[in-house]
Image (cartoon, rainbow, N blue to C red; front, side):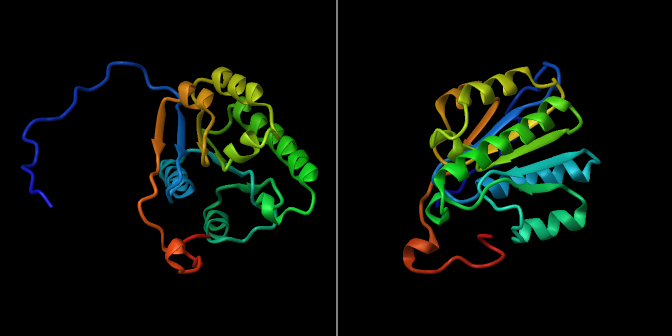
Length: 189
C-alpha cells in the first residue's frame, strides 16, 4: 500500500447548476448494486422524502431482509416478478409480469409523488426483451423534474447509461460464492 498525503485544498469547485431529479445507474458484475440503491432509499427516507422501490425479479411475497426492514420503516417495496429466469416455470408469464410491473413503476415516476423511485434489477427484463426500452427511456427523459430514479442490474443498456446523470459500475474482483461459500442471509438477501 502506498501512503498518501491528505488533500490540503478542496479537490473540486461547487457546481453552479440547479438541483433537479437525477437518473442514477448501478450496474456491473460486482456485488452491491441493489445495496447501494437501498442506501439511497434510506438516506432519502431519513430526510423525510417519499421513496418507492420496485423489484423486477423478486416475487410479491418475498421476505428478504430488505423487505422486513423497509416494511418496519414504512418504505413501500414491491416485488413485480416471479424470480430469476432459471427459476421461472413460464418465461412468457415472467415477461408479462415485467410489462405489468413496468406500468406500475412508470405511474409512480410520472405521478411525481415520490422523491425517489428505485427500479431494482430492471436491466434483466430489458435485456431479455420483455419490456420496451424506448418507453423506459421516454419516461426517464420526461419525468417530473424533481423525481430521482435509480436503476440497478447487470449489463445496463448503453442507451440508459448515456441518458443517466450518474453511473457506477460495480467491478467483480473476488466473490465468496466463487470460492464455494454459499449465499448467506443478511448478506446476499
